[in-house]
Image: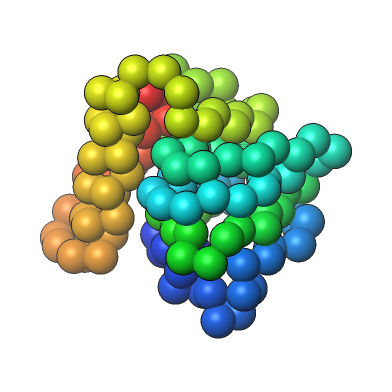
Length: 144
């Protein structure tokens, strides 16, 4: 199934810090904010956030954000077809949006950050077997 990893800054020239409300019809996204701050919208709710923050958006959920200059995140996009196999291994229910901002134990945020950066690195390296390596890593990220 389709899987894509990129940073928010990689598309900064397109969105210029503002992503209007939108939804993905057959794709979920994990967004791990690594630095900076902004405002995040899910359906009719709005949160102010600063990194570290993480969100999970299932397909069909309206979301968007406004961020301060230099704010960045790693975005992992997963097709619903691929998410089905990941759901069996995830501790998180994958049919509802989740938004958690930097509170709680620092070690847990560090572990989540390390997992998401590992997903990013494996995706970028594209070594043989990556299609078998990424789904379990994504399941770990969705269980943290």
